[in-house]
Length: 358
Image (tube, rainbow, N blue to C red; front, side, top):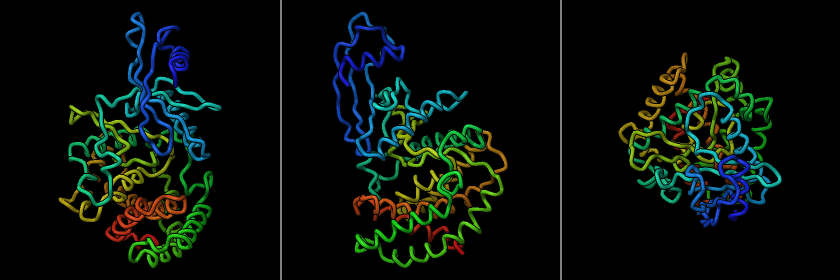
């Protein structure tokens, strides 16, 4: 985005009169699923003082998935802006554009915020994959505030339905898609499977219908509250204040929001990237769940016990166990999906999720 294009966007957004942008420097962030650039903007001396000098512009790649994800993210920012009292958990939006040239223009928070775990440090099994406890608390508090706001919120009808919903894929379609991915993995990458994975996954796929009938469908039929699920809420997608250990975190990359169980985001955050030892160390996983539940109640959620949360966490583990299968079928490198699969297999056993398929 050059100076002329940026000035046109800022002018259309009501941020800037014409004739004030004199230069733009762009830095590629190296994002793999979108084209993301940091912009440093120079203005004329008489430009309004409110004009932002540090921005991030995000555009999709040429792939169909990236363009769908961009549409989802732009739509979610627009929806959140319409809702009264929505928590301040998003990077501030400056402007957005739809097809044929979709983009998001956000305030760049990198001078004041940083991810608690960078993508390079999030490697499974490393100590660096576990943030300081203060940062964990900031992230979990933000997630609970977000989930609490969206709990049984009528606006959920305006985001993607749950994966099991008849309005979405429906559970049978979901099961069949995951099974096709599993068969594709076996045909092309079976040599990378962790020990015991082939036997466990065959056992799980043979019993997924049991899980739906006995555990997931009754949960849905109870009409108990669902909330907004981010879908990729791992630590590297959060920003926490650099100099304030108690300030609110910001959640990035709103490409796959949907309605569902809030525990789905927690499993992705904890069990997908932490080993069994890291989850168990000083009861780390349970302490996170306890804190999340307390914050959820503080946000106004009622009639949802800690036992309910743990039950939903186990259901979400069944869902996430199959995600590395989809990653592998989608072309992800074994170095990415194999460690995730190992962590999730361990968590699946630790939480006795076999019971949820019998």
